[in-house]
Length: 94
Length: 329
Figure (cartoon, rainbow over the protein chains, first blue to last red):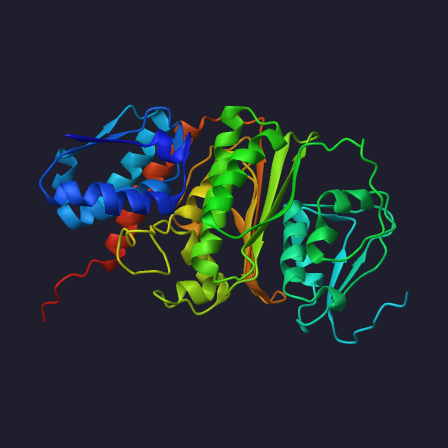
C-alpha cells in the first residue's frame, strides 16, 4: 500500500489545484493502473477547497469507476476535509 | 502641472457611500464607453466604499496607461484610506496624499494583484495575520479568496490577473472582500459549453453547482467542477450576508436573509432572495463582492453539510429536467 502525505506538499489548507493535478497524474494514477491501493494521508491538513479535492480524485472515479474507492483510502482527515471529499464523491456518482 | 483633458474618457465617481446594499447606483453611474482613458472624480466631503469598488477601479486602471488616467485631487477627510489601500500605487499615479507612518493600519488587505498559483498560495498564508482572524473565522475567508482568484486564472483570460482587497469593519464586525478582473467575462466563458443568451443568464448558470464553461458533462472536467461560485454564495447566505457578481452588463446580488427566517441553500440562484440588473455599463471582465459577518458562529463544517444537501438536490433536479418519456402514438 502506497501512502501519500499531503501536509508537506500543501500545508494546512489544501487549495492549490495545480499541486492536486500533479499529485493525481504522477502519484495516484500510475499505482492505480498497476492495480495497487493507496492511502491519502491528510494529517495536519485542516481544510481543503472543493476544487482541490475535485482536481485530486474526480478523474480517478471517472477513469477507474467508483470501485476505485475500494482501493483509495483517506486517512486522518479533519471533519471539513472529510465533508468536502464526501461532496465530491457524491456528485461524481450522480 | 496641467493635466491633459480627454473629452470622451471613461468616468468613475467615488461616491459618499457604496457598499453591497446600495452598489447599484455606483455601478449605474460608471461610464465605460471609451476604454482608453479614465477620469476619476470623488465626493468632496466623505468617501466610504466597499473594497469591491477599489478592486473594480484598480482593475480598470491597469488596462489604461497611467498618463491617460486623471484623478481629481481628493478633498474628502477619508482620502488617506485610498492611499493606504494602494489605489494610486496600482494605478501608477501620484495622489499627493501624505500618510503618516504611525497611523493605525487597521485590519485590511491593500489592493493586491495576483498573477499565478504560487502567488495565491503565499498570499493566503500572509493575509490571515493582516486581518487578525481566528482560525475558525479564517476558514471561509481563505476559501472565498482561493476559489475566486483561481476562477480568474482559469476562466478570465486576463493578462492582469486578479485584483483584490479586503477590509475589516469593526462596527458591523465583518470582513468585506472585493475581487475583480479585466478578462473576457462570464458569458464568453459559459458560452463555450452552455447557450446563455444574456450576461445575466450566464451569471446565473455560473452560480449553479456543476455548471462550468469547460464542459457540459455532469461532474465537470478533471480540473473543473463548476462549483466555486455556488460555494461562495452559500457561505454568504449561511452568514446572512450580501454577495454580488457583476459581469458584462448584468449584476446578480444575493440579498441578506432576515434573522427571523431560516436559511436554506438552493442550487438554483433564482430561488434565493436576490436582485438582478441588466443594461448596466459594460464591465468586460468579472467583479465579485462579498461580506462575511464574524458574529455568526455557524461552523464551516455545518455549512458543508448544507452544501452537500443542496448540491445533490440540484443535480437531481437537472437530471429530472433532462429525463424524457417514451412517446407512444
